Image (tube, helix red, strand yellow):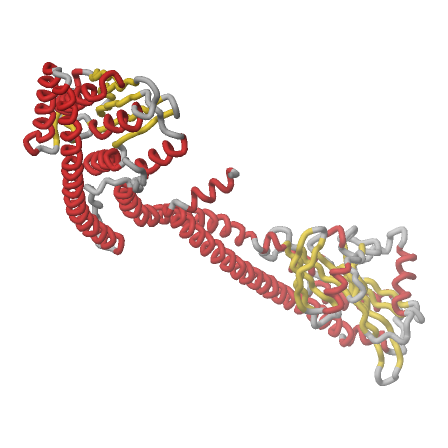
Length: 596
């Protein structure tokens, strides 16, 4: 049998481990499933809450940027509707530098009204009109080139009236904003009465005025904000290196096309939550991207705390499972131990009852059953003992007349031969034999008494058979005073003579000896007669050990001796045979050493 099978069988016989494993597995399963579903629900709620928070933040930022763009559009409208600016729509050309200064002053008040406006240029290419605000450096090396480039913004007579130019580096010699990022708002000046185009207003707006709404938002670490136009150009964003460039990411382009919503996508090899909204005042989309790991960072901390709590609860549950298994299995184990003793033949036991539950009721019923069984066994043993005593008396009644008849026949034979000394000796031994057989009606005698009885029997038989056999009785004196059942040796010695020596050619011998072995007395009868066959020897020993009936001619006497020994002393005692065909037989009588 393999080790695994041994473990399974061993575990299957231990109710303690079965109960513990069942409760532990159920508790662990329940806790694990509960924790899993709780965590899944919590994660879902965290994602929803995180998405909602980012969406709210994005909506607020969206409104701020929308408001900012709307303000810039309003300022551009004010510029268009300013009467001083309206002179550009007239047929009159500006006559001198004073008119240009007056026009530059009109522009300047709008720049001063909003710090996000870097510069304003008034343009008309046909009339070669270029009026910049004060930030323009006319002494710059590329001033003429800048003038021609800006005049090109007024080249399109079929403009829709408003155009946003994506973020770029400031593209003229600036007094105070060199190197900064700007985006342009271009508006045409159109004379509706005359139906003619009169010029263009170009407003350079600091990208910083948009960025400041993104950089100060309280969001988890790693969050990215971008404002992107419909062509994928980054107008502004928290990642400064990408401002003014094309954002080629497929994920970003999906957000731009959808304009509003949210989704989770892998971005830069990790999952990101993307939330995006369209700005109402301009055709831009504001996108917020937050790493899912940061979004769920609170969940991870809670998971660790929950894991510790779960382990503590699991430990307490396992200890509780041990307690439950112990409280159930312990009384069952005690009851099983008592039952094993009863199965081994010890009926003088009682189950200890410590509870009033079903196991306690079972223990009480078991105690009642044992008490009743003891009573019945006592009655049965008493009845059996009486029956065996009746049998031995009947056996003795059978032996005595037959033995007396044979002995008297020997006396007659000796009288005919006038051997009066042997007659005297024979009659004397016969008298002692019968006196010891009676033993004043007692069933238990001393070993000494039993040896004297068998000595008289052997002496009488030797007188009868002459030199057919010799005998010897050699028992340790230490066992003389111990008690034994009456009439143990005679059936064995009689078998040795009549079924051993008499079936052997020539003379034989019989030896009776004995000794104390531990807490037992052992008496032995040995002969060198014909012996017993192996099959019959195994049958005799098997029957004697198992308590089965022995069916053997002329075996009633030895069967009676074995049954009486086991009835009085228990199944561990009785007769034990060994023999070899043609070599003789040895039989051991084993019983406890007692003085009572």
